[in-house]
Amino acid sequence: MAEKNGKLGVTNKQIRAIYAIAREQGISKERLEKHIKKKYGKESISDLTLQEASELIDCLRQIEAVNEDRDKNGDGIKEIRKWLTRIEERLMILETRYEKVLDRLIGEIELKQGVRLAELEREVRAIRGMLKEYFKKEEEHEQK
Image 1: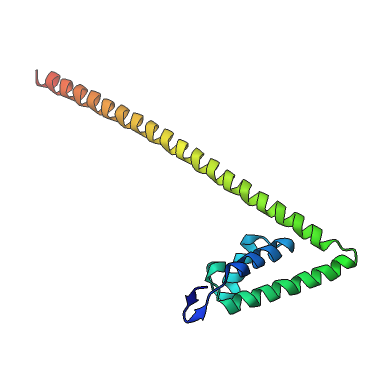
Image 2: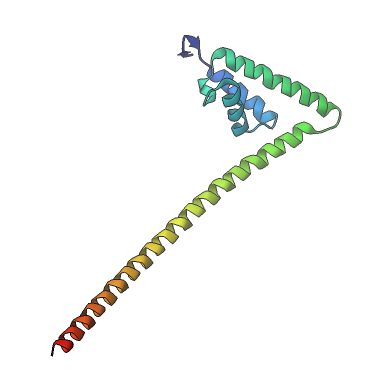
């Protein structure tokens, strides 16, 4: 257990419990981290103090109790939350893959545009050279 600002830090056992309860309740890691940032002002679960982690576990257990009551009534909320969490996780994986593909395509387009731009610059230089040559010949012709 490490000390943080004179307070004891979160334990590995608490971290495992937080993730396990959250996962069981259909709360994604991203949603949990967002809550931690909003409520405690911490960037990561490992930045929590011992007390904050205990408070978060209590909060998650309250959610668990409410969901279990609902589930007893036949709402099936627990199972729905699990499925929603799985779907959310898969969507994030797809989003990451999509972003990688987009980045690669953008890179390829920029490369092609760079090649095309270089070709255009060569053509402009060639045309300038031809114009200089033409005007030079015109000037020489006028001087004769």
